[in-house]
Image 1 (spheres, rainbow, N blue to C red):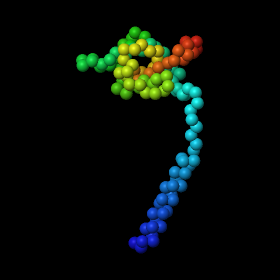
Image 2: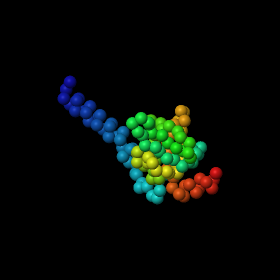
Image 3: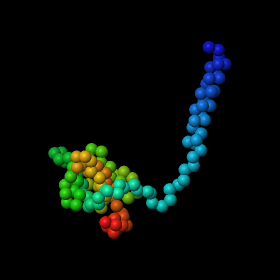
Image 4: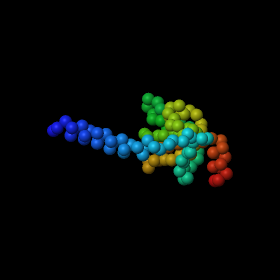
Length: 125
């Protein structure tokens, strides 16, 4: 192949790539103001959660309002700032949460609630 043809195809590929990225680069990002948006399913019940730390012979378990349930392998606990929390850091602490269970009745997702969210949920229910 002649050298000018290779150079022209390289320029064409580069131009195509840059043009396809232009819309994504043109979007402006706005800084987040105030508290983050929390998307909690409307049917997620509220409970006082206490995680029991795992031992050599027992897996991690959760108590939701005194009822013991298993913990799903993909457990996600979201803080009041919508950050993921390590379940071990929450173990042994009693926190107000809204939660969802998986198909097997294991704790799958929990959202730690602020005092204002607890009051608002109790007022609505």
